[in-house]
Length: 67
Image (cartoon, rainbow, N blue to C red; front, side, top):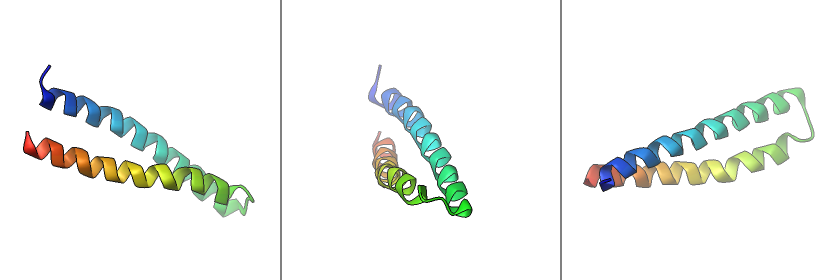
């Protein structure tokens, strides 16, 4: 398997992670809208991986451009 195919497979896996993070973000918005005391904690669980997700997407896009 060549590197380009592997990068596309990585992109697919990364998208599944992004989808999960978006689901958590929706839960955060719902809890925040309800005034739940747990909104901040769930927001932290969402925020840190979400930032890393954005960074890995940028790196993956740069890799795909070079191959």
